[in-house]
Length: 335
Image (cartoon, rainbow, N blue to C red; front, side):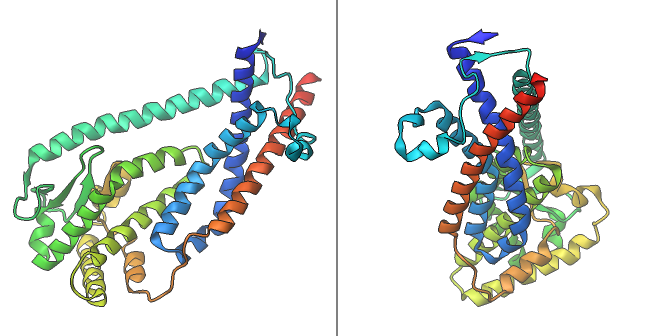
């Protein structure tokens, strides 16, 4: 049994973990209910909402911890809430109890995830070194674009701190100069947005969700990044927007037909899942990208009021749920 400040710290961590689990479940339910409505929002709003989904459990856990470590009992504004939630033996912590099991389990799982992500970074570092050694810098276009000697048509952006764009000779030989320029500009947009790093960070946060929800979150973020790169390319061209939209859509269709011949090749079939620090221009989601480019739909902006209300309710429910769950487990283990 531990008493004093260390007991208080361990109990706060345990409260944070319970709040994180409750918030994770609630956020998963909300995301599952609204996942198909995300496409009604602008790309920037959609990306912000997806980041909010994966960050919400952590933010709620911090809010709940802050609530329990502050003297709200003396504040009349929160007196109604303190009647619903209260501390349980906050100044004592028993390592031979369920508290330590939940605490150790979460810490071990988090360490395991961090180790896996560090391994990904280590492998990526060596992959990038090998890629650059086997490729040629395309100085005619951009100092950040490398050409790979490969018959497989592919283009991607890779790298964590200093990302670079890569395009294969198989793609250059089979598409026109205009199409290749569109693809290169698309990859440079990924580089400008630092998408490989953001993709890695997003996948790290998404790991804490159930497998199905995690895959949906990552898939929708990957598609949103592609939409953003397509839009960036269109917005930064001097020609008319409509003309550029059709040119980009045409290039996507050509690439889809070309990549179809290599669909069974493992490098193309699974390239979007091989490395979290690679952002590929492969045939995955290209149909949705074409439809998005050519759509004349008016997309919604970020729903600030809805997000604020939902976040408040989520935090409030998490605070009350943590107390109820804690009390229920205490009763069960006391018998």
